[in-house]
Length: 353
Image 1 (spheres, rainbow, N blue to C red):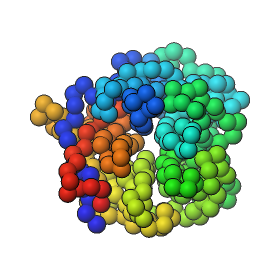
Image 2: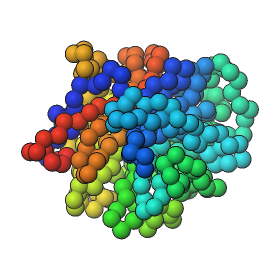
Image 3: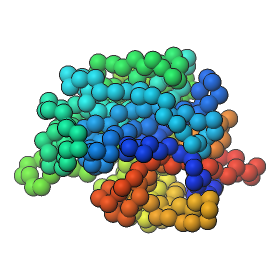
Image 4: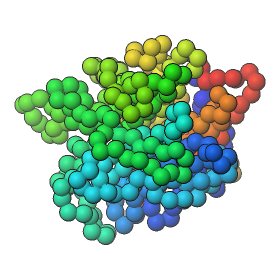
């Protein structure tokens, strides 16, 4: 199956996307609002804390606005702030994905909490910190709902995708990727981890796996979850983006090891006829971490995650990524932002195949 997405990517605007000088910026999901402007829902947390794993403890979902799809986007307010450790999403919100469902805006996201003290300003938190360990294990997928894209947003007392003991998603659920069907039902891809079975060695959780769930409407219940991971054991993907192309479902996602697309952290492409059984396209890239700027420079991004396609009138017009500088994943990153990549459209390329 031919991939056309990579070939459609135009040079990246130097002043496009969404940045905030004093914040780490991640994720990025965009919709055109009732006001005709483009609204990006993204994650941010202060640079006084480490990029990783600071996001697990102090990330919040915010909204930014632009007159054009590629930006630049300007911060317009916090959407899902911390609301107290007693809530399932009380300490952290992350992974926003905005959808329009009927007369409602529905925002999917990941939330978490922990019972420990707050981070203090400038504190150097590490992955082995108990707060980080508990926050990771408490990640769950939930939704917030609003009548207008600017809010106010109604949050719920429980996640829509809790974990399930004795299943492959018994530790956490995260990275929601919804596809709204014509009848209002929802196919939802999500990431999970499972606790390892004894005897234990090293980390007590397994690799990241993708699963499916379905609901008759956005607020659930989400059932019919896949009992097995969508892909083979040697495949580890995250950050799926899902859409429907006629009778076919399509997906792009991040290749954690590069053994599918040929580039570590590059983009993979998959398709499905029913949304539950997926075929990977091996040896081809949906996108590369090496991007072309509009001034002619090329740059290999340290990370390139959370791909999101913006469609207008059924046509993909812009591709968004959460990106970092540096060369060693998050370890040497000094800046992160949401990148906007305009897409070429011609009459002989009417859909993504």
